[in-house]
Each structure stands twice: as C-alpha cells, then as structure tokens.
Image 1 (tube, rainbow, N blue to C red):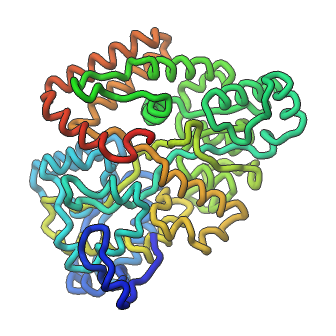
Image 2 (image 1 turned 60 degrees about the vertical axis):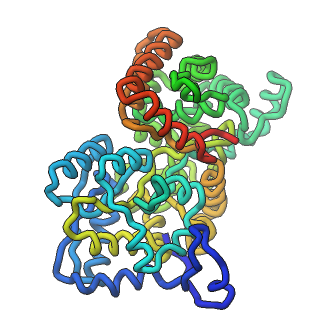
Image 3 (image 1 turned 90 degrees about the horizontal axis):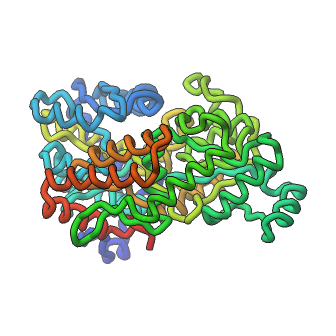
Amino acid sequence: MDRRKFLVSASALAGASAFGLPRMARADAAKTAVEAAKQYSGTEISIVWEAGLQSLDPLNFSGPMWEEQTGIKVKVIEVPTAEMFTKILQEHRAGTGAYDALNVIPAWMPDLVRAGALEPLDAMVDKYGYRDQLQTIAPVYRDNQMTVDGKIYGFPDDGDVFIMYYRKDVLSDPKIQAAFKEKHGYDLPVPPATWKEFDDVGSFISDFTDNKPYGATFFRDAPYAQFMFQERFRNEGGRFFDADTMKATINSDAGLKVFNDWLAENEWMPAGVQTWGFVENLAAFLKGDSAMTISWPPYGRWGAGYGTDEEALSWVPKSQIAGKVGYSMPPGGHPQLAAGFALSISASSKQKEAAYLFIQWLNSEETSLQRVQLPYALRDPFRDGHFESPEYKAKWPEAPEYLAALKAGAINGLLDLSLIQTDRYEEALRQGISRLWGGDDPQAILNDTAATWDGITDKIGVDKQKAAYTAWASKPNAYPS
C-alpha cells in the first residue's frame, strides 16, 4: 500500500481535496508517522488481527519493522474472523483498554460507531497531514469504507473483491469451442459475461471432458456462499428490502432464481461441492480440476505460483496451471467486495496517538505497497498506485492482467450489506443456505429467511433500520448502476 510522495507546488496548494480542505504537501506519510512515534519508544501497543495467514503481516513483517524504526513493540491479538465483532464490542463495554488498534470489517463499522467502540480519526489525520494521501485509495473503498456520518473511523486497508478465474487453455481449446457452437449456436465466450453463458459453458465442459476438468467449482459452504448470494442476487436485479416498508424482499423471483441456479450447477460440479470452503475449492482449481471459479484475489497469485514456496504457504497445492489463468469480472459484471478490512482505533485505548501513528504508517502508500505484495498475508491491492505498480506488475507474466481485473473490481464492486446488527441478518441467510444444501424447498427457505429478517427489523425498530438501510442503499456501489 504505498506509492507516492507529496510535493509542495503552487498547483497542489491551489487545488482542493475531495474532503474540501486545501491540498497539503503529499508529505511522506510513513516517515511522518515514524518520526512522531519515536516519542513513544519503549512502549507497547496492541492490534487485533484476523487469526491465520493475515496475522503474519504484523507478526513477521510490519510489526518488527515498526519496532525497529520507532522502538514501539506491537502485540498482535489474533482473533478468528467470526469472533472479531463480538470481541471488539465486549472489550469496549468492559473498558479494559486491552485493544489499541483494530482490524474492522467495513460492514461492521456503523454498528461499532453507534456503540461508541471506534475513535474518530479526523483530528489525527489532519494533525499528521494524512488527509491528502487518503485520496489515493481507490474510490470504492475510500468513499464507502472509511466514514460514518461524515467522520473518518477507519482506513480501508484490504481490497477484497471476488474475481473470476478461468483456464484460458480450456476455454480456448478449438475442439471445445467448435463442439460448443454446434450445440448452443453461439461462440463460446472467453470468459462468460452472463450467468446463462457461465452455466452453458460450465455444464458443456464438464460433459465434453468427462469432468477432467469440471466446467467450474465454487466454495458453497454457507459462510462463504452468503457473500456469493449477495452478489448474484443483486446482479439478477434483486433488492434486499422494500425501501418504503423495510419488508425483506430476498424471497423475490431474483432470490429464487439464484437458489435454483445453484442447485442446477451442483449437478455438473463435483459431488459434495455444497460442503466446499475456501481451501477445497482452491485445491481443485490449482490442481487443474476446474476450468472456472470465483474467489478472492489470493487465488490469482497462487495460481501463478507466486510466493507459494514460502513456508507459511506450504499447505497450498503446487499450481499445475501457472501461465494458463485468465482474470475477469464474474458474470453480471459487479463482483462482491466481500469482507475486507479497515484499520481503526479502539475508543477505549489508553494509547490512541501511538496506535494511530502505527496505522497511518501501515496504511501509507509506501508501507502498504510492500504489504499487498506479501504472498502469505492476504492483504489485497486497494490503492490506485497498487494497481499500477511496475514492481507488482513484474511479479509474474500475467500480473498486469491480474491487477487490471482487481482495478475493475474496485470500480464495479458491490458493497456488503451494512445495517444495524448486520451480523444477525447474515446469520439468518447462512442458515437458509445450509437448509438449501440439506434439501429443503428453495422458496420455503427464502420465505422463512425473509420472515426472520422482518422480525429482526421489527425488534430493532423499522424507522431506525430504514434510516440505516437508506443511507447504505444511497451509496453508488450498493446496487448495480
């Protein structure tokens, strides 16, 4: 997440930033943070981080580098993603001051702000001249994942977005293309741009190759699939709620189509695919068992073999498809900005300024560019400079195509649903998806899930939730334009 340095010039001083303040010299935000933080040398700050590969960034890379430069130790508190929201809220209510800096999934931010758990950052952003450099964060993240009610509460720090990966050698095979056109009457699209094309191509390849490879595979396990539902439902024209009444509308024709299409696709995907998570789907794709899939950016790096010789990635299967992978938007053209992370400060921290300086340094153009290139840490490009970095583009032959796809996702991506108590709505959706894989009737599941959503809304208060939903739905990336 790095990139440019601020230069004082007459034109820069004359310009106005998107935040309405004069453009400050694009000072080296990383260096500014380091110099200011030296006054806290000998202290320790804590940061909450997602357990697993993500935490290797502060544990092995950025944390030791920060201590070397400033003398401040970084204590990394690893928390499973599913528990992070609850633990952050519990610690805030307890007032222990155990957490200083935080990783926050952006969809949680409004809830955490309402609870008073996050510290507003505007004063420190201005004090340390960081406001201008925030403008180099890609707009979809900057404009949607940084502020609540006009105040900054987090720095977007992870360009999570679903990308479609496809085997160029399989989809461009002349025999497959000729047979596909004979059957379907149109040229095999490389890659498919609509879900109808995707289903035509995937089912045809599975049949033509006798499942070697399968036409496509997905992660279908409910915690992952709920993101896939959010994306596909909206690309099919669905809306989560009636904007006037706040009645849930996920049981509409669009929701039913998604569920029925999923069931039909499972018939030409591997047996048991409905139980697959991130790892199972990754293994199938890297081994060459799947011609198409959709997932987060690491699939693209690891498919190329980039960094998989790292000890931390020893569990990742050796790629059999390096040089054969294409990158594109998923069918429908509007991918889910699934999860992601922002850097925030705990309102109960007793070391807010030291913690702030750490997250400014982490998020800065200079440091972040290094972090998003770590093959093992799962931080994905999110700044304009990341997508255009000559250094990153040189990592493997297809890296420029990969970064171009991530940039397109940052323009066309769809925000995760964000409401009051979003986690309760998501949990109801996850339970509904589990019922689908258990064989229940799709329409009955959707009707029950919509009824559960309505019950949650009633308990929160229709008017309160309507205000939250209206604010979210008014954002340009809430629904396809």
